[in-house]
Image 1 (spheres, rainbow, N blue to C red):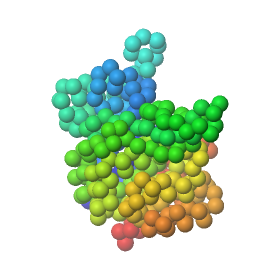
Image 2 (cartoon, rainbow, N blue to C red):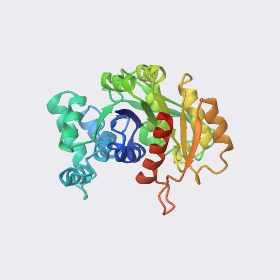
Image 3 (cartoon, rainbow, N blue to C red):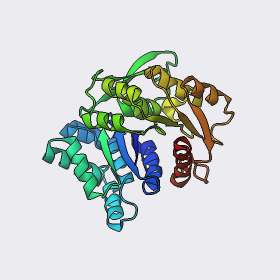
Image 4 (cartoon, rainbow, N blue to C red):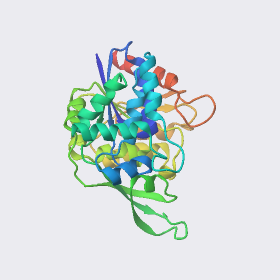
Length: 318
């Protein structure tokens, strides 16, 4: 059995999970997703403010991504899970899955139990866990958040606000600053064969995991190999970061982090020299592969990403 723990949140983690679950049979893969819980926009933000508890959106996306692809009922449930209500009434903008997750969390009184039960409903082929049982707020120090004052340095609070900033992110942190890590996530990290980071929003989905002290310590101490999947294009929050900067940011927020493999798209990476240098500083080798969809949009193709991950896992085993 190959035990893989994937870190992230939102669409990036979903892409990684859709690729990884394709390998579950051939590699006897046991998959765990560890999800950041700082979302405060859209439906998640509304539910978080109105009901309290963990924001459900990124957790929902991870569960839907892991729904059994070979079971028609599971796929139907995943489609329902992702359905977003239209209109202008109080349900508008909410997804069915977000509401169900909030309901399960209230019924069980434990987000991990609720996520496990939701996984059973979706016949998920892996487990979804929060990085912490405590809902987190993300804060950033940003230069030029207000375009009228491009040199001003301000504090911006909230995952959504940071994700859409036109400025340069100088620093990110969590509130509370030392949240307790989810015990089940710590156990998964300790028992893992591979830890996978990215793709995804670097400052608001990937790096927050490194800011949970006990989780960061477990990541450094784990005997697992570590793989970083780089993004295909810059997002607003990382508009000032090159791909090598993405790797340097990981080292900045977790100085003890060592990485075995950096996976990058062979076209998106451009001149790979800088990526090789940054990867080597983490102890990693770079694997270049065509992992983007063919239409030119900056999205990972699940089948192509699965092929690349399969080659990495098999090569390291050999």
